[in-house]
Length: 150
Image 1 (spheres, rainbow, N blue to C red):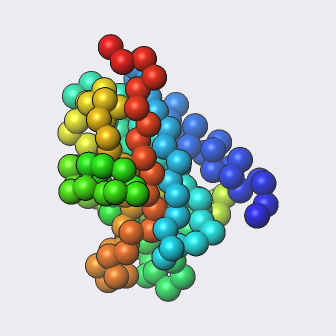
Image 2: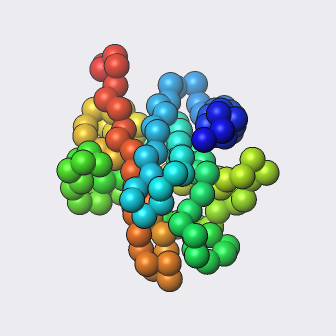
């Protein structure tokens, strides 16, 4: 794997976070590719928007054969990736993505839940392909617990 791709993904994620964040701190979640999407990398940055949380995603790719334009669905699930629970928040009002010049895809979503709630519980973020592409989970990442609970 070329080291420039993960660094580029991190830079894009951080720049998206800067645009979407408020004066409140956010969190970063590494998205791990599933067996259906091997070799890909991803990251999502969570931003505190008061009663809502903003999510800025960057992924390096989707399974070959996925139809274009790429349509991805995003969810916050209860539980961790290793032991997923039910969907807590579906973030699918808009499902299109935007191809990035750094060989990847970016998209953003929001969930009607405070970031502090997500950081205080056990939640994970899941990225899934559209039904026309098999409704396959292609990334999952555990939301880290808050380091300084209030």
